[in-house]
Figure 1: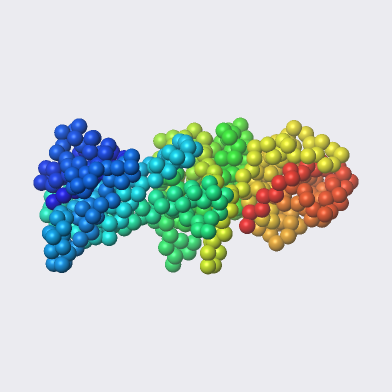
Figure 2: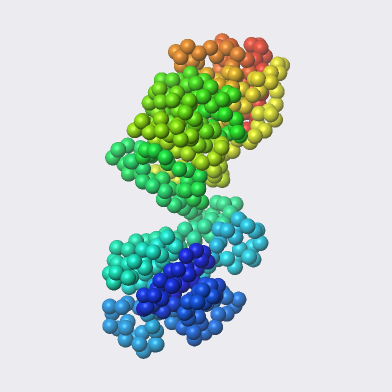
Length: 510
């Protein structure tokens, strides 16, 4: 039996090759892998001895040869194939262990296009695909985590059909993801990221309990191992809806650096937010905005959850808590809540991946765009449009309100007072409805919004929203501007003694 081993990531490859040799296998290898195995004292045949042709063109051609691909691809159970292999002097290759040139690492490290081109693997994917096509006779190993399983299967003298099939699927996934990465890079470089095809590739993290509803299946997939590297699920089994809510809460809570912020989300929308001197004070204030909606909600904590905060959270039913980290005592308290899911980022403060692109499924396809980003200076650079200038606290509140509004479903208005959200209206068909809904909820919750600021992620088309804000005692407004009636809106703000600022940037979220 013969194995061809040629890997860029050499983790565990020496031990794997030694295990194969101990089982009586002959090893064929190329380039750096051949040297690594030889230096480790493993008997290994250079691929050029098999191909009867030297590596050439600076290593661009090494394994693209009938003695390699014929050895991989001929059908072991087909007498005509076996006869032709004997006639041509092609010997079988029964295992292909290949992982590909580090294209991703190269494009992250350099913009040298010549170097990037040289790190596009040709022979590797060809061998992987050949082996995967003939998986019933050839093991296809692309992941070092499979080395031990493959050795155990070979040692058991079992044909390992199930494992071969699993490795085959993984091999085609491996080459498909690799080619997609190259195509996306080239489209970004030459077509501004919008080529004739768009490839969205994610790696599976886990199955969710179900999809949006119990009759739907679901799973979490990740870009660039983000969840593997930055999330630990400490308790519970998350659902599809839990994860989308976590995403919304995380985006808002992580938008304020290391400030002790807490955001509560229900069905993808914020129902509570506060920034206080301590996390427990932030949680208590955030809860005041809409404690009814917070029941069964998702809480994102921009810091470490301690025993005191965990005890406070345990006073009501929550679906998920995600935080930078947890003390052991906090986790012990949470363990009594069997339905609670707990996620940690294992950091001191929450971090957000800030993906460069965004897409949404529509029937028959998807729409794709550059991600919307809220720049740190949008509020500080906002233009004062009215006669009154906002106070320092009002500017701070406007920054909070603006960021929350920008990350909340349109149409949206957000009211913030003393660094805490006191009212929010979102997902409405008109901005007037959003304003009225927010104020009605504040009244029902017994909250005083007088002295608050209000943010709208898009312009107010009429002065009616300003009139309603004035009636509620609002002191400052921040919005993008851009309406044909901006002058009327500014005039209304002046009439009511409200400071008004335009950012010039719209943040629709549909």
